[in-house]
Image (cartoon, rainbow over all chains, first blue to last red; front, side, top):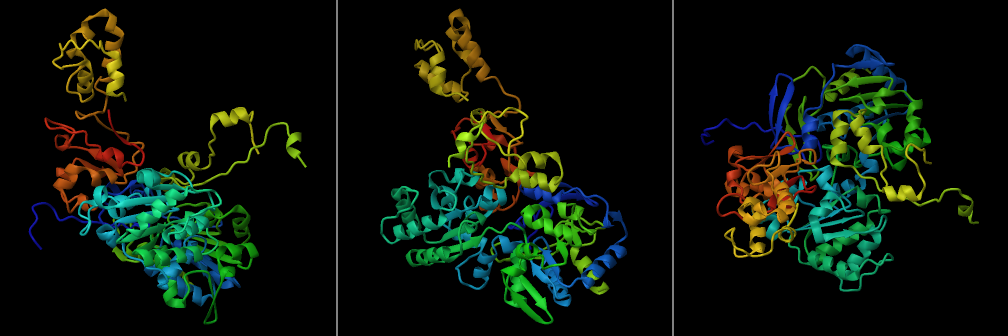
Length: 420
Length: 63
Length: 154
């Protein structure tokens, strides 16, 4: 290590989104974060999340930690078919404990990927699609497509840290001369604005037809869509893609929600790799949803929506939170770091009000306000450490930034398991 | 059956495209139950000319 | 913000050369580049028939609050903290190629023109900015890369 005249920099990892930026400098005092450098607006808000006092509640009355844990364990023990959901914002270590817990109590286990990018994560983990790391993108990518995603809003540093603007080892002149960014979306998002003329606006649900037209264009045939998208523009896009030496497609929920299944996307990636060289990276929102998919896959061979039953594992859409709540098959719920009452449609989430809910989260949510048991935990990445898997499959370790009295969800799950 | 001709005020078809904005994320992290998050996410905005055409007055409830 | 053509329309258009430029159009361009001020045009300043134009042009080029000498304004309430401008800024890249030039955190913040602090971009060391000084050019790296036009040059 060479001598540096200024202080050695202490970088922290931001767990605000799926990018897991590992170059954040923080000024903190005791247990308060004062200033955050380099992180984006979301990262700063995440690191500075104001905290109330340590908080445990049963039936809306404040209790101590032991009582809350006991009540939670009792609910799970007495349930015939408990549901464990969430874990997208928990560390790898916490997720592994949750899987053990689910096995022990024969629970249904699911995470938000079952209604987000789960199918894509599954295809990538099973090596059905070619992928690469974000560092590869920075160093080599010359054609970048943002399909159904708006990283400028969801992952603000995406373009500046990895995918478009920076210089890399094989792209030393960066965005101005060596990279082309393309956006395909139903509206002119902020990212589409940056892509300028390379923005292709298609109608909602028009992605399947666009993919077919693009495949036609790549094969030299006339690209046609029922909404009369100008064939000349599609051919222009096809030419850009054909010339790519290291292309990357970032796929967001905008595309996944528009497709009935992943077949069109598989077809497109196959042809793109016949004509050029293309990789796919999913735009995962939470910082460790990818980790959950990988950890559960390693344990069971599935990425989400599983039911443990006396040593066996069952899998299917009926074990996802949406179908479980719809059919009212679960009679208790342990929600970790998620807010189903907020993110699911009311017709489904209202069924959750009929069963006892244990909410383990780092802040008050709509779910916690209606939960029988609420356990306030530390913000992982800020107040507790661990490891996580980034959206491109790279493992990142992180230390806490500040020290507070809030227990981490890892500790809480361990205690619940012991109390069973 | 042309039910439209029986309606007092004209009906329009609205396609709502929802998206997450960075300031919504920031407001949600800072205070999920606060006014800033509510103003940024629980509101649908229409062009004033469209509202005028629909004869909607300020403060009225629309279905 | 206005442009040279609009300014030209407000000038005497006599090409009297009293400002030192060969034509009123050239003076309009010089005004835009902040090389000259409305006071450098004697007819504009002194003759009553140009009073209204003089006041209008002076209003446009009044030093605005918060703008620095290069006329850079950051609309903090719009800024995402995305860092696009930081990575695109030519002096930033020249002074810190393996830090912000490659998309990472700055190796030495003091040499940079644009950095991100608390999620908002901060401008400093404006003597390094390419739009300032004797050999200034109309560099627009930070403007075109911003998704919301939070950085502006007035």
